[in-house]
Image (tube, rainbow, N blue to C red; front, side):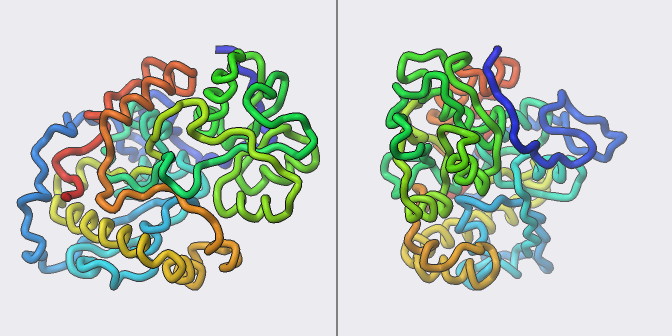
Length: 359
């Protein structure tokens, strides 16, 4: 691959073993390389575990999370009373990270039991030997959602559609990320060469708008609430979104647990998933109140009026991952060079079936 990509701001990487590396040494107290054979076809223990029969003491779940599209995950910590099992089956220790990769570095160091992750990072991590399995869907890029990750340009720039992207610089948040994938597929959808006809520039989400307005990039990628704030400033036009190139709905953020933790604590994981479903349903039914709670508890720093006006990604109250659709996403990411063929992990091996949400 000779895709033109560059970084305006290098991502913060923790010292030690990196997810992209081909495995990690046990000498560094990492957790990688195991193969539990977990499959989405395994019998789901959550259908038979009696959650009324709680342990004598709750088990701590050390959860590493991000700062976008994970509202119901934050809500479980911000308002534990929404679920039934916090403090009974489990206790949460929440830790926020700026990027997906940082979460996996902390996981490999033995500091986390569970992580939220985008699909590309999760596949890359598991293919490198990181011993986690996805258990639940948190959010999706979907046609039925209020919002999809959107790429914008300046009004009057002449950039209004993928056909106008030849020779342009497009903001992404990292090479090999979902934003990289959506940009490349959009370029290709216009009949252009995604490797040579556009340049992809790495910037964190908060820096995208400024880089666009000062001319450092031609197209910026926007997620909420940055999208709503930027559009209120005016002078921007939508160019494409996350579904323009792929043409199908896809997982945005998934929740993954350490496989050893799951095997040793299936009831804990099932109790957490039951509360996740309850939190998702409550969030969808009480979105403004939920957003106020998240602002009050410090999970979101956006002004409340902007946050409540922002659109939201699709969230499935059942929290189930569509395995077939995830395979379609993995195939497509390999086609566009976001993942390499040797990083392929079939979705049924990536998604846990023995501890999964129940309908």
